[in-house]
Length: 341
Ligand code: PEP
Ligand code: MN
Image 1: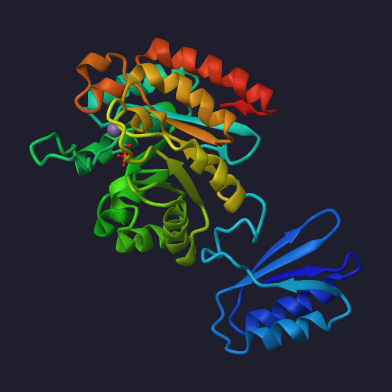
Image 2: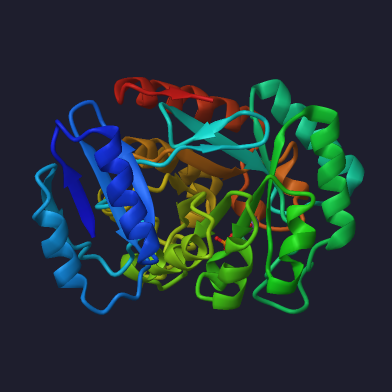
């Protein structure tokens, strides 16, 4: 439920409600605005919820009590307006600045990773993406360097100071990946791998949750709720394109979902125009569109020589194209009253 306090509620009043609800097993989310304090209370199994709501309503310093209607309570925008996620290197996702995450699809070896990391850093990229574990459609395709790849990512972080985002595909690997990553990526194919969601929820590190290939917006938000329910509210939603009848593009980047997620949830929303289109020449236009639709960040595949990329070469930008993308997106961001880092 959401409890809206009167403007004249004192700190003592607030504490008294919080103590009472905590005692009943509720988790409290407090947002103290300039005018009003709003308390979100979730998670209790009390049976007489409507009675509790009526009792709270009878307090003189409570203006209103309303139930949270969405099935995803913790990530719902009814609970709070926005979440800012601070990553290890100080970059904030979900704030005023749009955040660029870029890198190759996969870790392709230590020298290759260090080369791309240094080159991306020189372009101003602060978060490096690269998969050590690759969920490939074909079992004959390159499956990633695994644990060795994680160590290469740690080395790239140590050398460049960039934060690392990398995918975790098994619940049992979550801790191991978290030891090397600053952001855990849950891939589209694993969006409803509930054990993986729970395992990532138990780790304190930020999680980027990709939307499943054919998941509805509600299913995506409920998947995010699994992570938040385990005690980790630092979740980002990533739209990476869905399956439609169209075959010219690899997927159809669903910008409706970007705008909708911003109205339904307080979590930051990231757009991945690389997997969303599957064609490098469409990546920059769709990155611009994603930011115009309200995205808080971009996840882009980039490589110094895309023609040598081991996976997803067709959708990978070269570094000149990435520079142009940054320039373009900066202009769109400015039009939205935002910056780009
Ligand atoms: C990736 O980011 O390289 C990836 C495998 O993405 P997705 O899960 O969106 O296919
Ligand atoms: Mn990829």
